[in-house]
Image 1 (cartoon, rainbow, N blue to C red):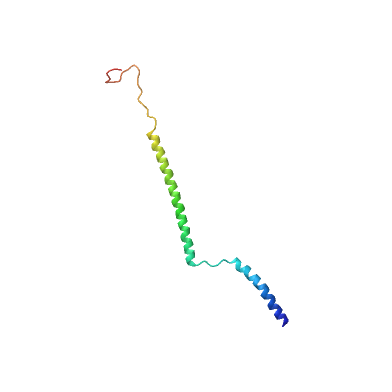
Image 2 (tube, rainbow, N blue to C red):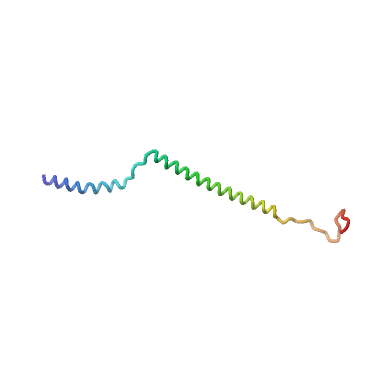
Length: 94
């Protein structure tokens, strides 16, 4: 009888120490609504990243277009060469 009491007392002291260690390694279950909410948030973050990337690409394209237009607008223009000693046609004097 004493053996049984000692075993019960010993197991009541040792068993609670072993169970929480196992319980701490397991994560609580995620509810379907929480899982759905996390998935929706993840998709929103991915969409936002994609939009930011597209916006950056569009800004870079616009900058390149502006640079090309500026180069065309302010490009040095070549003037026709003036011949020395000869008057152009239709001129009154040189």
